[in-house]
Every structure is written in C-alpha cells, then in structure tokens.
Image 1 (cartoon, one colour):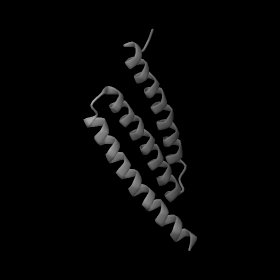
Image 2 (cartoon, helix red, strand yellow; image 1 turned 135 degrees about the vertical axis):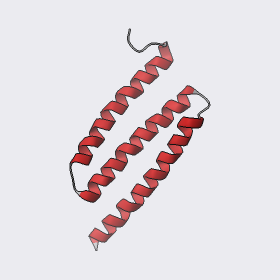
Image 3 (cartoon, rainbow, N blue to C red; image 1 turned 30 degrees about the vertical axis):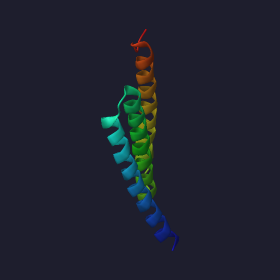
Image 4 (cartoon, rainbow, N blue to C red; image 1 turned 90 degrees about the horizontal axis):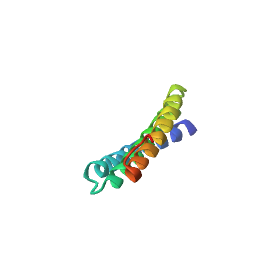
Length: 93
C-alpha cells in the first residue's frame, strides 16, 4: 500500500509543479518590469529542478538528481548575473 501512496503523491506533485511552471511562464512573458521577468525565470528553473527530483523519486534513477543539481547551480549563477546586470548595467567589471 505504501508504493501506491508514493506513486499517487508523486503524480500529484508532478501535476502541481507543472501548474506552477505554467504560472511562472506566464509571469515571465507578461511581467511589466524586468525584475518580474527575472523572478518568473527563477521560479521556473526551481520548479523544473523540483520536477526532475520528483521524476527521480518516481523512477529511482540517480541521473535525475544529478541533472537537478546542475540546474540548481546554473540557475543560481544566472540569477546573480541578471541581478548584477539590472543593478549596474554590466556583468563583468
């Protein structure tokens, strides 16, 4: 019975994450300011990372967790670069 509960909860989590990704994409496209678009992008990559983690939990393969780690690292670096660009107008000094 616990496998059934795990499968159902992972499936529900995947659906909720897809809905959150749709909302983040909408904010990224329609954001009135650049800061709103960057926050939509941050939310999108975090939801994508969590979706990969749920795929890894459901399948039991470690490649999904490694891909989620790569997305987290690249997403953080891109967020810092975009924030620095908005603050100063340049990324590399």
